[in-house]
Image 1 (cartoon, rainbow, N blue to C red):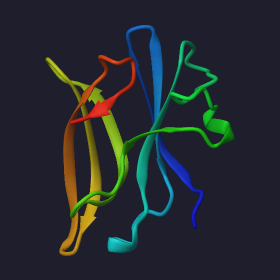
Image 2 (cartoon, rainbow, N blue to C red):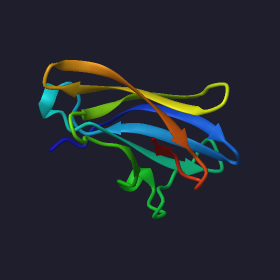
Image 3 (tube, rainbow, N blue to C red):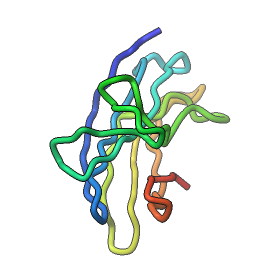
Image 4 (cartoon, helix red, strand yellow):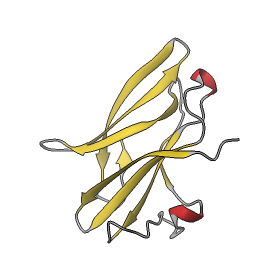
Length: 115
C-alpha cells in the first residue's frame, strides 16, 4: 500500500488554517486509492492536527473525500471560496475514465465536510 502524501493546499477560514492533502495511490484508474484528508492549525506554519488531535506529520488526517459508489480515488484537489460558498474540486476515476468532481464544503462544525 502507498503512503504517498501530495497536492497540499492551505486555506484560511475563521481563525484556522486548513491543510488539505491527497493520500495514497493516484493515477491507477479504478485501482486508485487516492483520498483527501485535512488538518488544521491556528498558525500557517503548523503544527496541523486532525479532529483527533493527531499531527499530520504523525499520520493524522481527517478524511474529507474517499472512494464511494462509482467515484474512485478522488484527489488532486483545489479548495477556494466562491461568492457564497467554499468549493473543493478534484479528479476521480470511474470505469469509463477520469472525471472532474466539484463539491461544496461546510465548515460549520469547525471541520470541512464535503456535500
